[in-house]
Length: 61
Image 1 (cartoon, rainbow, N blue to C red):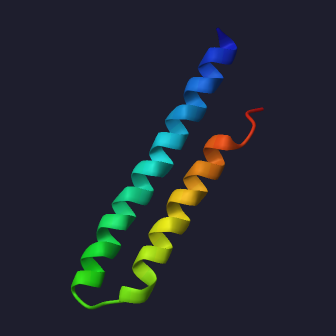
Image 2 (image 1 turned 135 degrees about the horizontal axis):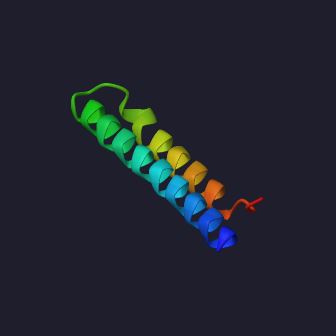
């Protein structure tokens, strides 16, 4: 039961990171539509989502 709780905590943290990345993506998309930082918006979204994915794949201790 303890291991299941740890896995669920890890999954919850992963979902939080993905949610944050998607929120940031929406903000950056809106900024790019307004003409602010259009070149960096998509690159940063990809970076944020990759970080969330890497965290998900990270071994749980």
